[in-house]
Image 1: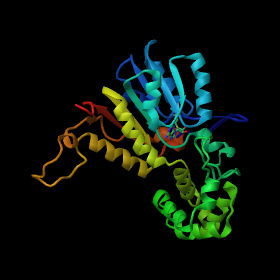
Image 2 (image 1 turned 120 degrees about the horizontal axis):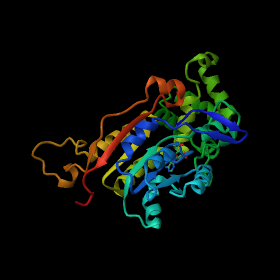
Image 3 (image 1 turned 90 degrees about the vertical axis):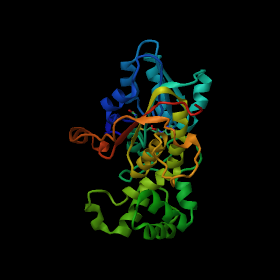
Image 4 (image 1 turned 30 degrees about the vertical axis):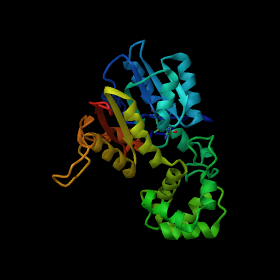
Length: 321
Ligand SMILES: C[S@@+](CC[C@H](N)C(=O)[O-])C[C@H]1O[C@@H](n2cnc3c(N)ncnc32)[C@H](O)[C@@H]1O
């Protein structure tokens, strides 16, 4: 994620998080193919390209059509950038179309971008009035509006508790169902403030933060995408290639951490003497350092970086070998 800076009426920029750390961990060779699986507004891509030779390239993927429009403009200036509108879980299809069998490095910078958060029309923010949309990919049918107005009270309660860690999930779900249909971000936000009471507005975090986060995650199937995307990304890496993931949410980081541990042969706790398939325990990757978080200086300059955690893994063996 990144810090808001509104440039003009409809133009928002995104400040890339952990920029130097990401690029230094990802780029191990000046040549070859790299993938920015979450292009956003290209802050990381442009820095990665700055490290690469004239023959190298960056395949830029995003599920958001506005992000890809912005990547296409960038590609006019630097044709080493190759933009594709796709889910990152479909990376192998993109690479197949390009005739690429494996790549030197892949970046996944998770979550929403500042342009998505800050444009009221996208419906991600509880602070500005907008339609209850929250789709990262504007071409899919499911919106926050259709999900919220059709889900059962139990379904709403369960996503609020599981994806939002919202302690008042039951009361909020009950009130949402009682007040439906809800059409705008502010209508939903007001329901939550009523449940939590006006005093909750003086807390450090806005009372609607957790509900909006949970709803966004369900509309975009974020955790399912992440699990599929990590597997696909690792399959597409060359031996010696690196996968760098920046997450912003404890659920995301837990998935990344456990996938990386499994790749490094540390994920399984098996009873001694139990016969196991070799492929389950032979490490296919090694961890590059531990989790990296932004320093106070970066957080002061870009408050949206505060919950970021970067993890890096390097492939040491192909899946088949
Ligand atoms: C935090 S932003 C990336 C910002 C980018 N690193 C930059 O410097 O501008 C995350 C981006 O990932 C995209 N995204 C999220 N999930 C995705 C998925 N499953 N497949 C493809 N893109 C995805 C979002 O649309 C968003 O543009």
